[in-house]
Length: 237
Length: 290
Image (cartoon, rainbow over all chains, first blue to last red; front, side, top):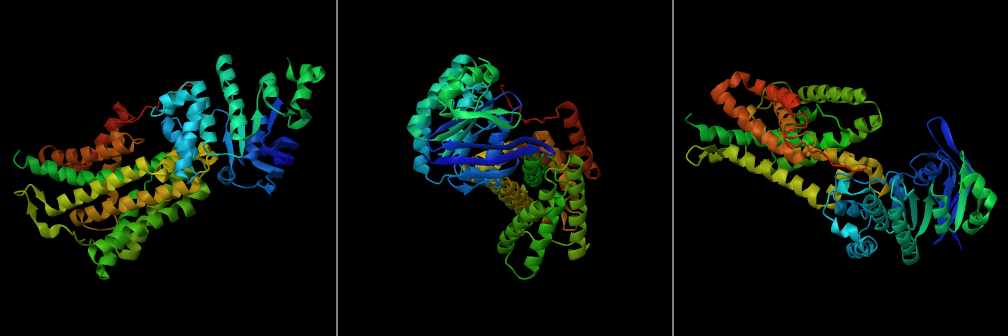
């Protein structure tokens, strides 16, 4: 398998403060890589670095092409859809408008409509709420909307920032089981950030453990899940 | 109270001008959260361009279209050259830039075109009074033009992907970038549209108030009153507010305070709204669950 996304010596920070101190990771074509770690380890910053939302150093390659240093909107136009922390909902707009914005860069009208239907297949509730103001959705529905908005961009790479955040366990399970379907049916590659390590390790092929801006453990998700010492010392379950 | 119907109709005609300028203010306010003090001065400058084109021999409507296009380009240029470098600067920097822009555009207008008051032609003047003296040709024509502009702007923002992207960029620039919207250009387009709408307002009001470099000063105040009355974050509300202020001002001028104190009405509205209902009549309260 070839790597769709490759980071080499990636550094990033805010102002004078460096958050990532040169990390290497990859997301395989049609694969899922998970970034794990405690609060403040640099997981969200890593996703922001991939999307060009923070100043970065080192190299980032998407399908072999350098994307570091590109503007966020140009990276999105290359097929990187980012579901940010806080979900990034356009609160003032309707569910429909939110989804139309997700497909903003696409010109194939028929394809977009077909993708809308496909997304409604995953999240029927969004269809019921299509004309509703997005700010009135529940947290779980907003997360579904955020994922849908990302999917209708027809991304090659999906960046998911803590999709379980602030949601009831049942809703989290629902979203992850749908994510599994999406992964199988859409053939999209995913870079997942998650606090809930057991959930993430079940979902991912590869995992990277971040500690204060450095990768301390990496490998196939199955191996990490079985390694009791890693689990105890880093993942706490 | 004789002539009341005419006073109301005349109020609607000027109200259309206020509504256009109010809409221009709201468009920039939504994107930047600041009021563009120079909006009126920019419109005056545009109107002088129109006058120059007409004097150079262009037919009125050709000059009209050219002026709208040139104003749009100037609006885009102002955003790119002046606003963009300070986009992440603190509020006071923006206020400073807006005041500087007000002074520069205002004085540039006088410097380039002269300070003397000029007569600006109306394409509807030849109609004279219509409907038994109820409305003059220019009042009717300018109202139709402003309503058409407002309708076009509404349709653009509601029903085109670009309009939606511009609204999204104003509400949530971060998420907009993540879906691939070039936010910087959306802001520039917003400035261009606001300048174009202001230019139409300037050309429609100039035959009534005569053209000089300070022509729009009072009008900007009325428009600001209208925008606040309707809700500065709600384009539709600002337009309704603009019309309401136009009618109110005309009636108050004719029957209550007299023409000398008309501008006071605008100031009273501004203060009244800010004290009683700061969000305006139609100011949207955005619901959000977390």
